[in-house]
Length: 401
Ligand SMILES: *Cc1c(COP(=O)(O)O)cnc(C)c1O
Image (cartoon, rainbow, N blue to C red; front, side):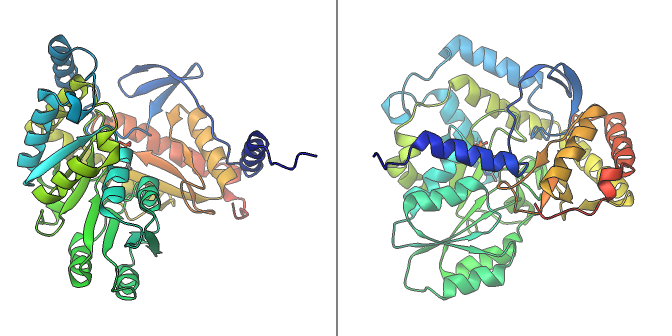
């Protein structure tokens, strides 16, 4: 009688399909933590999945800055930025970041996801062209969709393909958008090359440096700075504060005119409560600590070098990454889950990353390294990977998945 499809039925069906393909996700609670150890389902695991690349999330400087700001400002910002919620800790963070990074202006968002939605939805109109790397982070793709722009995706890191897509459509206003460091592969965009494409094609270039900020370049100023470039070449960048900075939120840095346009027009900036001032204070303390303690960045890179040398020697397939993201390519989703479970049995947390986060057939263990990992902790992980390699399921031919 009633032909209307039921939303709840459809959702159950989608979840069942994920389950059948070894793609069901488990939401696990970390019940305790101590240093790099976390407790999950009563099991004590050494965490190799955190984005806290510099070990700042537990640094006393951040906690002290938060506590002090709470004393002054309380727990919440109480309003949106333009309606009295923009407090001195927010402004101080923006000023400091802009000056440090050599950009005219910075604007704070509550998350990187919101910042990317804001930039793309504000800059793009429905008749515009948005050219993006195939492996860009989900929120960059979502931003272009939200704007209703013509979204064209080029083969991963194939800038000739990007240029051809732009050249094929010269009438439309255009943006060229890429992760600066790819979140599931760890490789870096060629900043000079992508800048040249954007200039030749008169496209607005926007780079998302969620994973390069704090990790690459002098003082960890990020992928663009590491290439010796700045606002003249890359007029807009997004930098997250929840990864290497060990805090929460995101900054968009750019020219005065672009940042002013975001303040005026960006809906994820206008219509949301400003983040707690104490969180902004922690982010500022994170930047100051990262600069004052270069050992964090240096230690991270030493750990990366050791990991790559040792794990490649075990015969694993690593990816072209010089960053803290060091995935081990496994292939089939079920096998990646077996690997993650076998590592957990040995006391290590390194989750399997599967479709749709990565393409089908490219499931992987996403191992992330941190300055907080000791040499001994890293050596223990490498030993566990050596043992894992001897397990029978590792050597079975795998189906696509
Ligand atoms: C994590 C991430 C984001 C989102 O940042 P959040 O602050 O976690 O919302 C955006 N882009 C990339 C490439 C990321 O890895």
